[in-house]
Length: 382
Image (cartoon, rainbow, N blue to C red; front, top):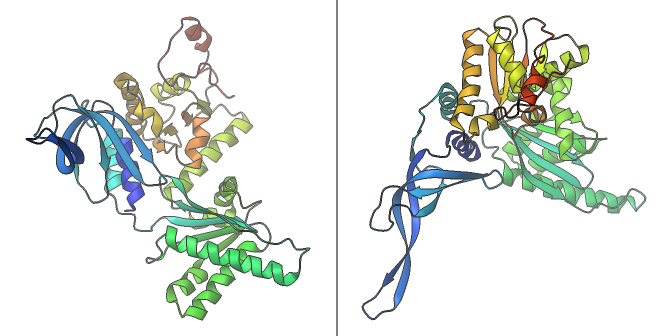
């Protein structure tokens, strides 16, 4: 499993008030017999009650802050400490409110082998390349490459030289950012012929250096069209027919398909697409998100609520849909599909049959004031 993926899953598992035990490094100040003080960094094991977490996807680092609950010779109960959860270091987690079905599913995802590996992608144009890694759970921008390339009105030799420098810089950055020791799919996308020429460049470098890995990368790379080399163009790349066919068994591709289907039903106004906590909750309770095509889409951010009642509310929806034979998908807010769902309040559903009045009580609820976290107030989209 990729290092960043492990920390990402751990971040989704660890919540405020959970108990976490892990390796720690503390700065300890000691006073000598002469009254002077010395400091040293010591390795120890600390147990904290979690207050907050911070995940840095760029550095694949997870920092968990909290209060020490078990003292030792270096710390006292109540002191604050931030634990850095590192790759290949074990930790123990006790969940205050127990391991519900969503937490257990997240744990199973974290432990599962990623046999096919993540997909690498380079979205590029002349002088610009965005190098990404697309996993089942998120899309990570690994590196952005920029290089000065003379315009075509300049001497052809200058332009060719500039593009060679750009391709060389992009290739070296790609190899540093993503591990190709095991075969993995590489998507190359650009307007014009930039991506195709880059694929050719990789093959030529492989032949020149007698590098089997480069030759393999070039041979297996898939070139598709994009409107630009900017990061936002990755969405259209993933939705292109040739890429969709290649990735049809990938989790993130399925989630993109579900979101596309949801918005298509909005366009058709067929009464089977709803969003917002209250309308979706009513549909689930009526058994309308079950066997026969029902799909519940929930952003993982909703399960990170510090209000346990709110988390249990969404867990209950997931459990009910699965019990009814429907499909419940927890989308990553780090992935394009999850970001689209986030714009709808973080929860949506595709129903097995049309209902036209799921939001009829929304105005009355709003007049009463309040409402649980995640409510969007009259969120029908038909």
